[in-house]
Image (cartoon, rainbow, N blue to C red):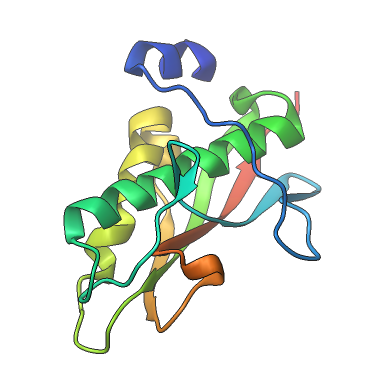
Length: 153
């Protein structure tokens, strides 16, 4: 089954890609590796903003991380043409805007990690970082970037 068929089976529609907010490219392909710049959580066309431990709850933050994962897939598909070229999700980096006493960043970033496994199965298992930060661009609650191995056929 192709990844496009898998997305359809799961009822997942990838969002429209968003342009970079600064001086960078959304995806850089180098050899058989794709490096996806940090993606923000767009839900219904709006960035999910706020700070965990202050004004964003865990459930909303997990959904925001999943939205980051969806944008990663959308940006990647735009850059390489087909998600069927994904050989392995190698690593995700998750950044969570949070107060100093919030310690569930790992649970938040599961939103993106679980999506990758849901879509790619074993190819979606990956290494990961989940860190708390005081602020993210445009006040976003979460940002996730990715390193992805490609199979060029």
